[in-house]
Length: 253
Length: 205
Image (cartoon, rainbow over all chains, first blue to last red; front, side):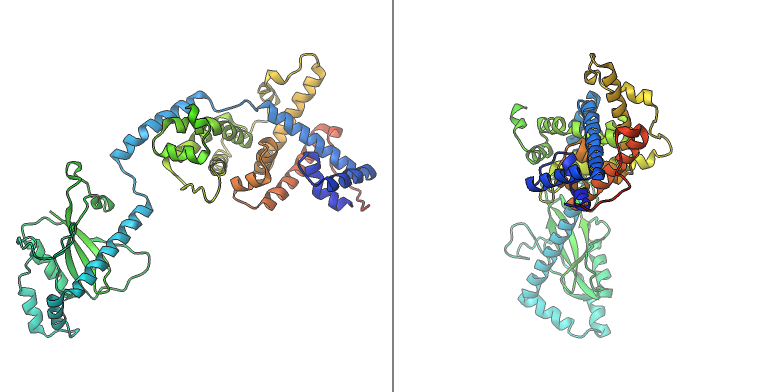
């Protein structure tokens, strides 16, 4: 062993760390023949002793009892604080967005599979720039919300979601449809845009879909939740783009 | 409470997050001493050590940092939080609370239990050594100081220290090597011939 190799192991030698027995013997043998390395080892051993003395001098030191008391107090307050102002981590918000997107996709596909209305809509929207007359007629045509009108056969199946399909419409029609919806004796919140990680294409057209959601969904958008009605679903309008992605949502009362 | 003593840190953490107070106390009492001493040795300040210890467990309660047991041990996570807190405090208090060089103040902190009443000269030497080593450690740059505090004073393995510091084992090893060389130099300058640095002469036997 030479001095360079010795330098690599001198710390472990001085700190009496577990090491290869052969290497250890060679290191110690080298220190016996090399004055410089012997001094180096002696210095490291003295340092180790000094550090051990320092470590022992404050071995019993610990945080004072008041720290434990303060933390315990905070721990006991924690559940109350969480009830008053629930914290929604980012992953929960992202999950909520994903769920909404999935709902949008399901609804979109369900609508596309609906036989009669879809074909009629496709006929209406067959041309990207519809002639003024049909568009005008569509704007003035009252939109009937079957669910609100008491038509129980609007959508068969599904126990939780009550979907009211809206016809496809060019972008400028969406605002009119929204207005028509709002004309019913309803109170609606503003639309909340639904954010996605990936960029989505600008919306050219879309449709408004009425859904019922768990009331806890209100929290995701910073809206207050009536705890007494926590189990009752809340009605919402989803704005779904032609790509099937839900772009915005509003809550209706 | 006794049942909790046999549980691992991760199990205690799971119970803690479910609101189990005893799990919190068990984990706190298991880890607070080491964290407090780490902060104390890093900062030289009992006030900072106390604050850091409290903040580490507050962070644990709040779920800050999103501890993931698959990425490292709970101990490493706690020391990582403590280290960040200490460095933040040192940076913040850099111009406000410089580390004291007052020997008398340092002497006063030496526990009586370490003083052998039958050997006053030896006691004096030992106290001087402790004071000198403490000052030398506090004078190290932070990235060297932390490996000395963890590996030499805290008796952590290289791997444990690496996990706590978020770096490679080789980095810990090389930093410790350099830190100890600096300490020997500082102590040699302070104590004269008691601790000798590496000589100027080189040999390749």
